[in-house]
Every structure is written in C-alpha cells, then in structure tokens.
Image (cartoon, rainbow, N blue to C red; front, side, top):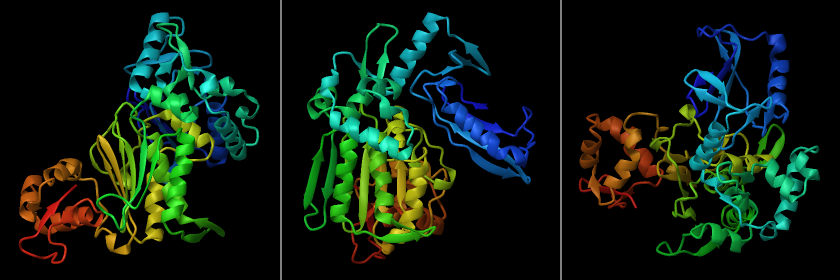
Length: 432
C-alpha cells in the first residue's frame, strides 16, 4: 500500500515491501481477483461494504494487481474492528470512544453529503424513487440486498442514515435527502440547490429552451437525459456486435458528473448548456488540482462517495474515473472531436459537437496547463497572443500555438475578437 495516510492510497499486489516486482502466479490470478472483490463486498469482512476495482498491470512480463483506494466518506469496520492510520501503522481504535468519535466527526466535516438532518422525516422522501432504485439495483444484480429492505433499512445500508457519536443525534443525511427527498425537503435542507439545463442556438443571449431542475438526484438525472434526447442527435455504433447509442453513452457520464461530483455546500448552480458547436457543463467542485485533465494521467477523487455508490449500484455510473475515459473514447466517434475537462473550484466540461472543434493536439499535463484557470481569468478582457504568451512565460511560439492556444480555442474556452479574420495581426482572445 502506498499510504496517503487518511486520504486513501494505492494498493499493489505482487510487489514486495522493498518495491521489487515479484508478480502473481498466472494460475492464481482469477481466484485472487475473485477473492478480493468478494471480501470487499462481504459485510462480515468490511462494513459498510466498499467497492474497489482491480486492474491487471504487466511489468517486466510479470502481472501485478493495482487497486486505487479512494478516501471514503464513511467509517468502515474490518472484521468488526475500526482502524486509524498513523504514519505507516494501522492502530486499532475500536474501544477508544474518543478516537472513534473524532473519526466520525472528521468524515462528516470532509464530506458535505454526510451532514445529518435529525428532523427530516421518512414521510418526506419519495416512495416512488425508492421503488425505482430497488428495481434498478436488482436489474444490475438479481440478488441485490436492497430488494427485500424497507426504506429505512435501505437508507442505513447505503450509508444515508447515520448517527453522530458526539451529539447522539441520528437521522437522514444530506445525501439521503438529495437522492430520495421531495422538492420541499430538498429546498429546506439546501435552498440554493438546482441544476440549469439550457439550449442556446438561435437566442444566444438568453435561451431557446430551459429546464430549471430542483428535484432529487435520481429524477434530475432522468430530466437531464430527456433534455439531451430532445435537443441532440442520436448516433448508433456497433461495439462487440452490440448496437449502442453513443450520444447516451457520452451524456449519461456528463449528467452523472455534474450531479454527483459537485460540492453541494457551494451555492454555484450546476449548468448544462447546449450550443451550436458544443455542450458546456459546469459544477462547483472541491478541487484536488487545477488545469486541463489528461485522461492518460488522471487520478480521480470521490467528491461524494456515498451518492456515487448509489448511482453505481443502480447502473447510472461505472467505476470511479471511467466517465472521463468514456467521454474521450465515444466523443471521437460521435463528433470526431476531443473533449476538454478543466479542474478547478468550478469543474468545467466541454464536449465539441463538430469535427472543426477538434483540438490540434491532445492537451498534455504540463506546468503551463496547471495555470489554465488563471489564463482564462486573465482573458476576461481581450488579450493578444503575445500578452497571453508572456503571461504564461512561454517563449516557444509554435509550442504555445499548438499545445495551448489552439486547444482552448477549439474547445470553445477562448473566443476571437475577429472571428472572420483569424490571422489578423490585431486579433485578440477572450474568455467568458
């Protein structure tokens, strides 16, 4: 395990403590993988259960397992015991009430989704949504335990009903309210919560169509997908002899990302905007970095792990981080263009809809890319190429044009003051 102390880490099986790759016996690979996944989904081993994916990696012709372990929003027991990380050691704190209490407090402080609302009533949750969630979970796994649980049992099983060990208060969490609550309960718990779906094609100053979505996350997902179906063309594709809708493949990921990977404490509304040449999405974010994301060198962090787990159980999302990779994969087929993802306090997703929007080169992770958010802020007022290049302290003009300027223009993040004459010596660039 490569520790990041209490913030998750990386697990390598088939590597010695000294860092030497010893590999895994090929005959044991399937059994080891199955045993690992079974253990992580066994409540007698890990409670609450925690989904982790196992990736096979070949190094020097030897196979090892790599497992990314994200920080969890919950306190987990292993074989009935609670452990805390201290430098390179795991300390059993099960019988230390103070330390256990502080762990719960720390988890609730780190994740807005865990805030407890002791006066929220089960009657304020939507029974129809519970029915939908059960059916979808069972469609993913016929023996899913939620099938036979009542509403309260399901909430507790999913980590949506917690107890504060410091105050003794217990109740439905913000995550539970956002997933299952009626609109009145959601607005009482989080007045600024909304998702804005906008179509701007003819009336670019205002909008041609709009859906102001303030319902729970399950219904919000369906409303966003209906908006997509209404305004974006299908495109079908044969993958492994199966006909799939690429449009839905792309935008189910975009919809899921802006709903479950947002910082709900921030009043910034999530936005989903369809324009003539691109789809542009924004959501508030607890940033773990800044700049353009390179899908080949991307370590995802769970923003709301409990909400994300429910979405995964019902088939709305796959494993953590797969959304970015899927959008890159399928948008090349859908429009022949590369999407752009920008990490910051506001997470931005740009999905080009036309081949002309294809960047000249896939953005790579460079020191300059880390300053993308600063660059866009710098260009709130129009700037010349030289001014931007000087701001980034890049001397190589050709590198700047191909690696920085063109991808931002083609992704729709920078606009031209003279679009009719792109090579004008008086050309300037601006963001909005």
